[in-house]
Image (cartoon, rainbow, N blue to C red; front, side, top):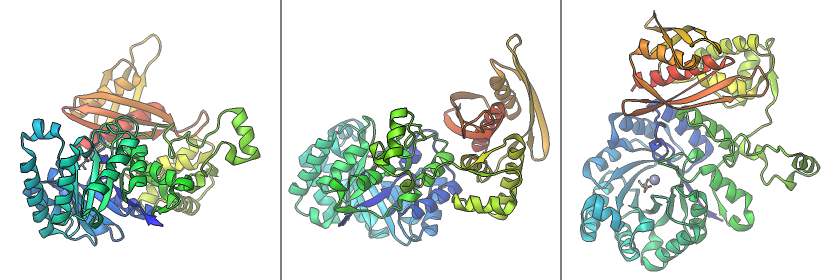
Length: 501
Ligand code: KIV
Ligand code: ZN
């Protein structure tokens, strides 16, 4: 069996998705879960980008013991120094260097000749080696690079001591056969290629990231870059869950390969990343979407009952999706509640547990049946790590078909109530405008989504939204049985994130 190394870049390329940014504590929470999931290497960030990024990568480097921790750097000394220092305390540190090699980038981005690029890369690998022995090198935009120059760069990088050569399809332009040929050509034309591991890094601009990554594996790549839920720059990166489950499900094709992912942790990881980045997983998303294992048509349901494999190629339990069950009600005690949360994978401290239990009891007053997904929603709300500066005290709306909606919102900051009134195009808009008056931010609503967490008229509603404030995109999430309250909470959540920056 040949091992495919899973290189997770959720915390670096994934976090580059607009609005997906996380703070250090949130990144540590994701890193801990990625370790539990069994990834081999965590690309923890781009340390030179900001002091916060540096702090987050350093904290993850100290925290994570089983997997490698990698920091990204351009071929610039300052980047390399930051990357090297940030992973110094890691048990298995790695520096990932990248430099564009395609004609388009050389001409328009760098205005440099091939020889200059080769010499910058050579010097940078030498510098990086002084900080860390494990170096990965990426010729950025490799799939649009002249092949002869690509072979030359790869050979040089290996000679200088890079142990992994990553081939990025930076703009998601390639298709599977092309990727297969490229990896094959690299193997046949780079004399020292056997001294390195070939990695693949695909973007999803044409929806081909997973197919391209798998094609690279078949051609000889032994490390795959991927992200949870496929989040990342633009249309995202290759998704970890798709690659891993494709390899598991299609044993006839990938039977000679193995990886270290504990697939039962996939769903939990997906939810955590979705919660902390506020990136809603589309219902039709392969493997982790709400509908991925739902069968609507009567013909399908009938056949499934007769024999599952008629319409189901994977067992949902293999990715950690259990049937949503009725589990607790208003007579359930704190102990049963805590036990259930542990089963769902939440590890709360005493204070968080008390707060979550209070929310659970409130919910029991409003809703008869409490499902696992309801519990997840309230607990996920409660274990947010960013300290809220603004809290909701109360709101009142006056709305109807014949009147202009008006809202009064009261927020609490530092123990003091601050209130404002506003009218709006609808009750939610009126509340948002009142909040803007209180906080002094001028926010533009960029995206607004409402979904029912479970089914039924009393279902908990969850609002996920994105705000544009100045040049930043900030996301927020809130849940309640009252959808206006869920929207108000989501808005306050986004404002608090902005305050915490
Ligand atoms: O897409 C890309 O080329 C990258 C590099 C930094 C590897 O993310
Ligand atoms: Zn990328």
